[in-house]
Length: 304
Ligand code: G3P
Image (cartoon, rainbow, N blue to C red):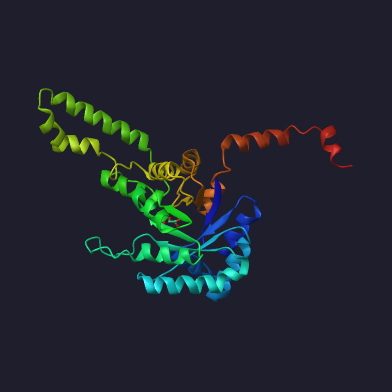
């Protein structure tokens, strides 16, 4: 699995790239806001154009850098994408344009399909697209069909959505044990079916409690962010779809492990979470013991 760093902070990109494990960078307007706030907080001015060019150069050739448009309609998104590509791709030939999969601001509004049309138009022009804010396998399928090179399912935000519906209090980086939720759901269903013995199948099937038990802890059949990525990977494999899946909105190291198990092509990970991937108390204990056990004869070997 490739690892991207999910940040617009230049120092984090520089540092993570120096570790030799980073294959790309993803940004979005919120990450750029955080980076700009940090620079300004340090009392410095920021020249956005120079800063973004530096991000592309630091990542370097062969490491894609996703830059996102800010408009919501096709004409503007195409213009912005072309501008970003023209300005920043020459630095290291690594720019990918992020287009949200659906730009409607109101769920009740009729969908305008501008996002899909934009993805199609730009992909046909040879500009690589990362379809972002993917929350369902269906959206991922449409993104791929429209020609996106990458699809970014937001795993952490799906976990947030499901946990909130269940009324579970959680911290942003908490691991979501969806196996446990599934077990609780199954137990509820078993209990309900047991209590409804003798009820005709049709009424039992339509029964509200049956429905609630089946859909328990799920977003239309999806039980977690990891589950979302698994489903997209399955669909893409079924049809040999070349679009690469970037598991995004990653909050903790265990999610990364599960994304790798699911076969995600890429995980885009916040800087502190990448650091967390190295941590284990027994590793610390082990290195302390090794250091304490070095005998003088062994040390001398390195001093000649
Ligand atoms: O890659 C998308 C990511 O930046 C969003 O993360 O934690 O705000 O859901 P988060």
